[in-house]
Length: 217
Image 1 (cartoon, rainbow, N blue to C red):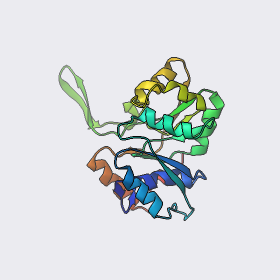
Image 2 (image 1 turned 90 degrees about the horizontal axis):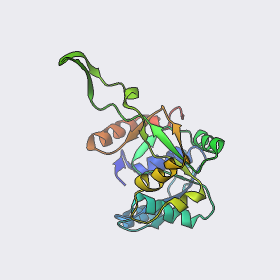
Image 3 (image 1 turned 30 degrees about the vertical axis):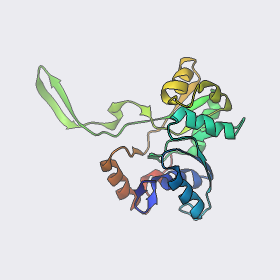
Image 4 (image 1 turned 180 degrees about the vertical axis):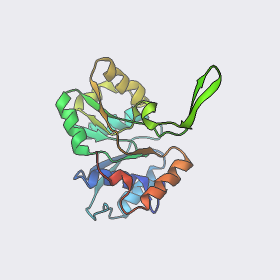
């Protein structure tokens, strides 16, 4: 519910989906769930094109980890494929392309791989002499988990308890049996882990079309 410009970041996140025709949302809540409930129930929430968003909340518990939150949502939607994401990262991802990629490989789960922001300067050092000094190229940083998952119903079988993080639990187990595929997203992706990143997202949100809604990839 942290505000980016004058809207909660979760609203900006749901816009990525809603503007592409995906407008059914379940918000998995826990900490300060009453604030999210009040926002959902007290407002007629529409996307940037004034299309209504169909939103419900599911209080999954104060101490429930990511795996438990996903499992409780999946139990609300038995035998349905779901698209899941975190509430603190924005990307100009094409949901249709993500789902098409998932369907093409036939595995149980797809995770979106992204390049981490290049936060630090890069130095090349030879015999203690700096031979190159400059900004780190984002493409040199490898790939990380950017969220934006597509999950088949059977993924529920790999979540063992509400106290289990999705990343170290189900995703690790799925990767060991070659049931986790990566959709490589080269476009915009920005988390909001720090105050500096929040301020960057606020600058982007002031644009006519913010980068997470531009040239969807």
